[in-house]
Image (tube, rainbow, N blue to C red; front, side):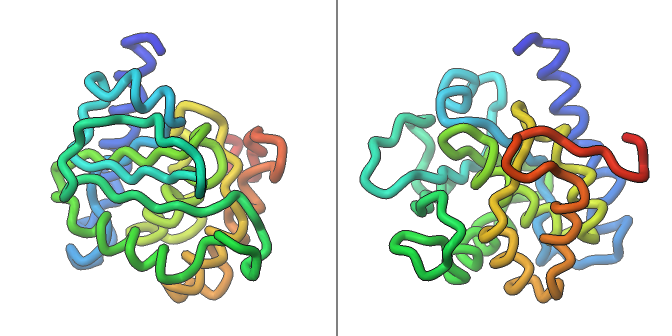
Length: 197
């Protein structure tokens, strides 16, 4: 990624905080408020110094080797492991306990911190986690609008992870609906609606 594109992505991450942070929304600091970046495992490892995250959420696949960033202090890195499945009864499916752990970890990141969320490709599971974190501080439609500039790949948020964030954040399905309206499911391409952005 070019330095210019990296600079634009970082600016987008900071703009989301400045324009929509706790002061703008009236939400308390118990919400996630740090800068956010979404990458794939390989890119996260290769660009770790460029991104310079203060904290990392590493989403792994059960039974697979971890090839992401190394050397992150244990108290600043959260590992969550689940399969890319949409059936919540499947073995190794994501669950509400996992979403609660992610929220607890992310909410503890200082406002001036940088949170890197990465999965294998940075497209489905990590994009859904990032969207859930954005929905912790923004209305679901605004969260969906804010996601793409924070991702290095076109996001295709994982529907089951979104459903779980919807439940834990008590959003009554609004997050999943916002993602369905904003993103073309299963193609990894963004569907621009109404706003023309």
